[in-house]
Image (cartoon, rainbow, N blue to C red; front, side, top):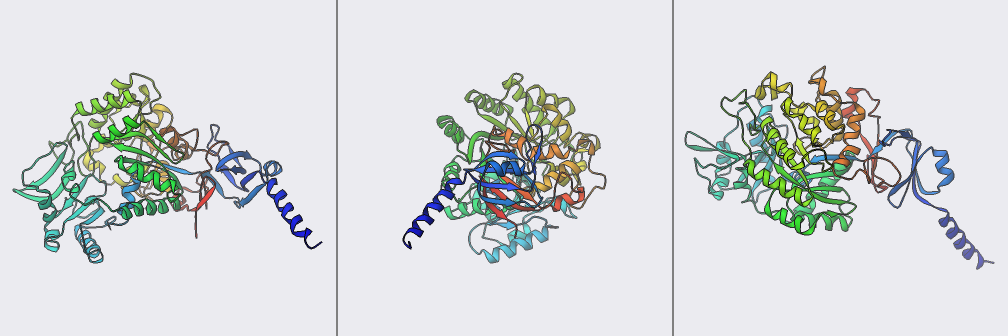
Length: 543
């Protein structure tokens, strides 16, 4: 008999294993499905990485026997958050560079750079995040202090928006930059015949091309460290806007090895080699990687006065900013992308840049369509140009925290009248009835809760202003949730596979410690992610 028991036990175990018909059951939850009816549920079932059923716990437990059960304890569950506009790889690199965010003066920037340099004694000194608009003295700095501290070691410090850099003389010497030198779509600042070290928009490339490329280890580290941070805030898909084609294979390999689990929608940057790559090979699509779009830059940023405006800046007479390329270039690129059936996504901040690109889009798209061509940011759009979005189904891809970051100084740049029609997210949403939301990180914080809060409350993390910034353009909580889930997926042509908790879709979801659809407005920025799942696999848990 002793020999029979192990056999019976083995058979019983085998039979029990066969009884399982699901991998995971999530129950006792308030599930915001974000389906077409915006239904809620209390449970859902996952098998082989996909959602197979959604509904009541008792009925699902009758039908399914799951290997694992998660009792959500009544907590709110949402589809995995999607950031429709970010710089994921750049953010990861930045985690290994000098962090200049929240510096309150140029001296504080210099001190931070000095501290970083002592800990990293070799190679270029690279930093990012300074913003002169947050300083008492709001003028651009000059390179004198950097030259004194680093006479031979090159330094490059990016402004928070990525559209301007401050460099020292050692970096200028390596790039061969001379006083009075000019460049289309950029500015090399010279005062009294001397270089200040400020390089704006296209001028940045003169310097950045001289920086040695990151090692394989640094590159992998950038992706994996960025992923770790993003999972902690509930992001399960990111749109990485403007990568070279050489990154596609690196991302694919990391994902194939299982190291990079983050789903990525990659836009290739506006460069001949990137067009050649994708046009020859066609769109690249796997469950975790989608490459079918191109990122084009029409102008610069408002903070560095590179945004292209129809009328001069209110705080700089006779200056309207500039386009980064001639309109003919944008026309040629748009036709080429349309002919090959790809998506065009164009950075446009100023009302002049938006008008140029909207008209070019309209000429190519020729009326109603489902191309889902996007204008990234759409920050300042002349009221008479709003109709282009609806008439040609152009998608405004916006970042609500830009409004609450810029509101302190945007009026100085634009004047009161022009400011009233800027950051007009409600009006933009009304054009097509849907609108993806993002952050533009690392320009802004990666946290989608800040996006949600800024969209509905139009306040910053200090709770300012008390009544919200231009509240006529706030959107509802439902719209904000759709913007970071199903609408963001739709902007990527992925709404049939993600963005909601429905049968047949990937099991990407998050559990939060508070219900963002019901919590007090002031509590929204403090809502934390308890758990993040991709394909039903837990990739983050709050400690």
